[in-house]
Length: 324
Ligand code: HEC
Ligand code: HEC
Image (cartoon, rainbow, N blue to C red; front, side, top):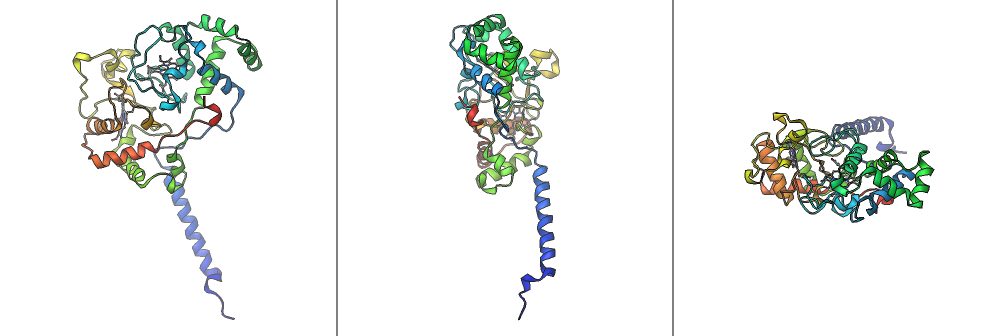
């Protein structure tokens, strides 16, 4: 009987080796990507769920008129559709609210990179009474009058409702708000997860050098950079405000003028307006300005469109149990 060629071991062994080699090359390629994958938390615990209740509870503001979610909306990429947020005392925030998604304690927080952890951020917020109108002692007292909070806090913490425990519970919730996106599926090997335009846009994003500032898990968030590194970015001097000075406000150092934390680009398509002061309405404008001022490039309309296709593939949602 004539033997089928393909059943021959001599043919198969080299074929298998080629396959293994190819797979390991592919794995290496992905391991070197400047953007890394985010995942939902492996399990949702009681502390996160307590933090969730606090995050959406208007009792955290003096007039019971706003919660954390009022300025960090889940239907708007973790920010708001306005440039600045109105605070409890009627004044407006210095900055456009940063997204609440994909936070981590490994990087500085705040547009000036001035906040060292999520817990500190919550703590500062309650010390600045103008934002939500409550101080720590008032908030602790208010929550102690709520039997459901008393019960849940004592189940989790021996000392019950305290400033630290409130901050820790909210922080655990916030840190769990990761938003895996179609682009993460693509990074993990699913070629169909994003459109062809998005793939091309990602190539441009790397080739132009956007990744030198926007990289890592959050596609940003881990560096402080000047706006206008190549071509000066002139704010309207007449309207020049404290916010335009950026990190200078925190350090008083000349070289920190117009320096900001590079924002994360996850969910960016969902959260206009853009830039620290919310002065830029569309992604088209934001990408064009980035090319011009950060890289010295005039990016064509077609390539701006491709980059936006890539940026749009970075939108995802938090774990279902963490949703409002
Ligand atoms: C009135 C609007 C408003 C409310 C209410 C509000 N925030 Fe914010 N939040 C902001 C603004 C504006 C910023 C940007 C501040 C900055 O960069 O200095 C911000 C920034 C943050 C950041 C830093 C994010 C980053 O990546 O830098 C965190 C974390 C945060 N808020 C959590 C909370 C929590 C938790 C609450 C509720 C206890 C809350 N916020 C309530 C407006 C608000
Ligand atoms: C030298 C560092 C650097 C480079 C390179 C860079 N960026 Fe940025 N990017 C920043 C900084 C800093 C900001 C914040 C600017 C501000 O708020 O005034 C920013 C903001 C943005 C925003 C607005 C995000 C938001 O939430 O407001 C987008 C979109 C963006 N960059 C995309 C890009 C793209 C696309 C490229 C490549 C064409 C790029 N960036 C290159 C540093 C950089």
